[in-house]
Image (cartoon, rainbow, N blue to C red; front, side):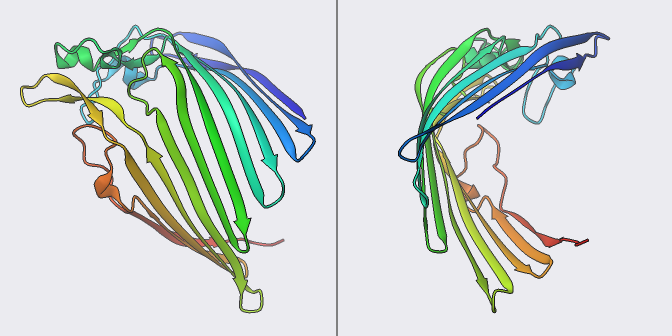
Length: 267
């Protein structure tokens, strides 16, 4: 199986100019013996700087604009070998990512820490690439399903100190139909673990300073109940928010509660 898509991205900037960049994605799946599959993917696209990055100072999360920013070019190539025997799934993959003219604050390069305006000013930092590998495993047991993914950096160069080198995510899922098969009940707990990375804070003297953020675990829970054409749902996000460290000097978001009703209409 093979699929490819191509197109163009159009950007109309605040400088009264229009720019076009090509975009391409391709994906292929090769069926192999012994319940094996090989999946290959390629993606090329461009991220244009938005108006905030070009003109306006962000004082909430300090960022200084740069009117001379160029578009960021991104490429991603991956290959994954998967084994699915029905009820048990395992995958092992490798991915190469690269960015040219990467848009980041100056401090990500490890320089420009003399004053706040320089450290937090957006720049095109040049070329950066990384090699990552990931492992996924999942299995079903009766009404239960389990999933775990691990992603780690094999090799990295360039300006990516603000990105974790190790990440986990997973979920536990349960589903059943009750009351003579009229009531569908689903519960799901998912987590995401972020490894250490660097950020820039403003110290007591008012100067920018690099700090290492500690790893943290994000926990969420969701429950759904289906009754005829109605579905009641509720979700709790950020259950252990007090342990989050997503950014230096900022209080993380607290527990978020979502609930509601989905009503599906027939013909």
